[in-house]
Image 1 (tube, rainbow, N blue to C red):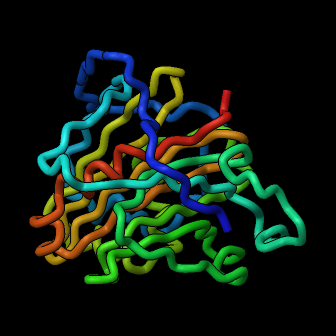
Image 2 (image 1 turned 180 degrees about the vertical axis):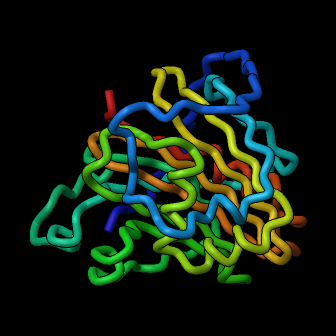
Amino acid sequence: MATIFSPSPILSSAAATASATTTTTTKTPPNLTLFPATKTPLTTLLTATIATTTLLATPPSFADPAQKFSIYYGTAASAANYGGYGGNSDKKASAEYVYDVPDGWKERLVSKVEKGTNGTDSEFYNPKKRTEKEYLTFLAGFPQLAPMDVVLNNLALSDVDLQDLIASAEKVDSLEKKDENGQLYYVYEIDGVSTHSLITVTCAKNKLYAHFVNAPTPEWNRDQDALRHLHESFKTVGSF
């Protein structure tokens, strides 16, 4: 299992100017289907305003400067190699992605079976409220992202909680962003009746990575700034 190292910046410090453009139609590029089409696409359940935006990653600002974070280095090892013998002790050197974890949050060890069935690679939670958490899933064999609504629909196919959240959502916002290297990320924000969810999805190294930050509404209202920091801290590494 990957380990946590001492805090350090993970987002580019390069200043960037975000520009937003509203997209009403999107022509699906050839050969970008993420999963086979389903008979009942979850797109019909979305009441979202989808804003497609291209922007550069910029450091977020936070209301609580006293909050401390540590960097988690994730290796996205396959289920066959998960918990393997020997291995590279330098997790930072072998990491495929990183994200920040608040001090005091606990790591939930992911089982080999769970890793092999739904692709969950890592998870941390607030011990004061276990449903306030962040986690990452990945799938191999995806060189690039499919259209934005297709990706969200199919993430939900293997996540019943996400299906329920989308079905009861008051609003679903979606946007695109690119980091300083030009890597494309899809960003989703789902405002549910009782839960708020922030999701970032990208492709690198022929894998699809999906980072989730979920919180019940009371915790979201209380910890929104810190939770947005977790959301914005995710990125893949060594991709270029």
